[in-house]
Length: 250
Image 1 (cartoon, helix red, strand yellow):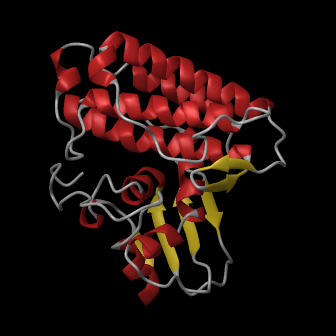
Image 2: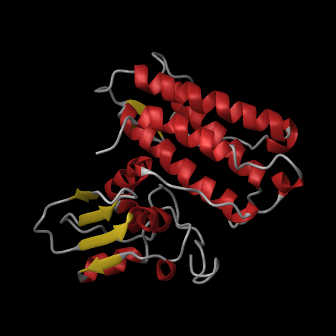
């Protein structure tokens, strides 16, 4: 479908890093309540460190836990960004060199290296969106976003769990249009429940960076329509999300 997730993590990280402010905007509050630009970067560095550890022959403690206390105020902008760069590149390299058929410890469970790589891509997309929304920058997305699309479709049930609902037994069909115009499809062709969207809009929805009313994501079927209101591609409780019209409709 798309190129190597590990190479794409390097490219996406470089492009996002170029948009990160190192001036007073580093301390600006992002749309995520309580999260500054600096904390977003620190969090991505910590998650990348967890992925790097998970890919080691003998993972260190914390590889399948939760990120620790943020250090962005202690380290400062330059050092935190440098740490994020080092960790994300080391994680991509370690994951690419790991046994691709081996389950690694990850987030209170396990996952193959490529899944963890896709999770890092999702983290970078979501937290990166908070950063560009704060500093007023625009990102140009490529088909590298396909890793986030795949992850969002694969983690369909996270939204149900977050809201205390039972997930349906039958799979959905996802038909997502890539930035290049290619069609990415997941799920059986004859599925009654379908989700149809451009890739960027789909990823904004499943990472909870836009309200469902502000993205071009269509549902066919009653259950798929309900899912649009609870979708999230990360584990844990449902957050406040974003309000309709919060970003001028986009």
